Length: 188
Image (cartoon, rainbow, N blue to C red):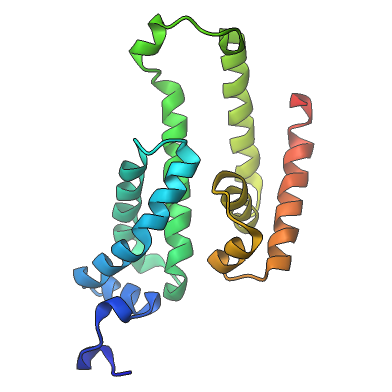
C-alpha cells in the first residue's frame, strides 16, 4: 500500500489517519468520516429516538460538535466510538427537549387510559431518574447499556464498537443493570 501523499485514496485510509488530517483542517478527510460513519450514527439515533424524523438533525449536530471538538480527542483511532458517544448524547438531549415542548396537536387528542396525566408524569419522572442513574455510571458502562438496550447491539457488536473483549462488555452490562435495578427500586 502506498502512503496517502503518494495517492492512497482517502476512502481507504484508517479512521485515525483521516481524523488526524481533519484535525489539521483537511475537510475532505472529515467528509470521508461522515460518509463512513453517518449511516451507523443515523441508525443508532433512530433507535434511541424511536423515529427517523429527528435522527438526521441529531447526526448533523453530532458532526458539527465532532468537527469542533476533534482536536481534543486523545486517541484518533477510536474516532468511531467517540462519534457514537456524541450521537448518543445528542439523541438523549433531543428526548429531554421533547418533554418540555409537547406538540399542540396532541392537546386535542383524547388520551387513552394508559396515557393519563398521572401516568405521563410518572413516565417523565421515571425517565428523568433513569437519565440520572445513567449519568452516574462509568462512561463504558453507560455506553454498553445504551448500545445494548437502546441501540439493540449484540455483545460482540458492542465489543467491536468499544474495542473491548465481549467478556468485559458482559461485566459492564451486569454492573450497569445492577445499578439501575438498585437505583430504580422504587419504580418496581
